[in-house]
Length: 270
Image (tube, rainbow, N blue to C red; front, side, top):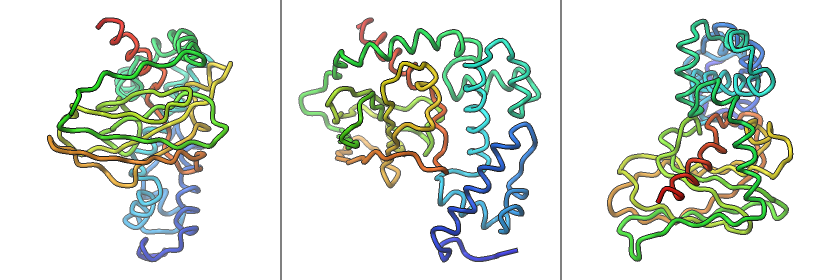
């Protein structure tokens, strides 16, 4: 058993160990997988394994496994929505109630509704390929604001999502968030409840395949390096460089097309 402090390990060493653990999780979603098992697999103590895993991914192995299970459930529901019980068992859930609760908590919809609304949400997304998204109306001189500037590869064409999340993984709705399209790469958030948040962004390329808007393992990723402490006088300008995904990036579990649809409905109601 290797007991080397993670901070002294070569970058490639702990990244490789993390990737091995993630691959094992993916291949054993229907089983009980513990941090101790994963640590033994990659040759670390449980304590040091948890530290290197969090250093690489930003979250604990348990949180990552939870997100993988829900993400796998999403993908299976898009292919075979009628096989709910089979899907639930294949990703490690033994209780329909538990699966329903956890899925809705992460994705924002029940499993059945997620499958039933995917076509509608896909169509809603694609209408913005050639129609500008309207910006939120901002106070003339807000006391608190976070100005986000996104940078994407020059050839990127699609929708950008950016928001402040309570955890360093997009596994639930953001506290505040927005979507950008065409050449718009900037947004400003105001009226944010005080707290500690993580600024995360994603870029989804335009597609004619509905799965591509819900299975987000190939979309661009962006993250502000440090958690942000927000209070009533916060004024912050952040630059987010969106990059191709890495093998150890946590899944984007939250339903981004749903967030866009809900934003549209709120604007229409006002």
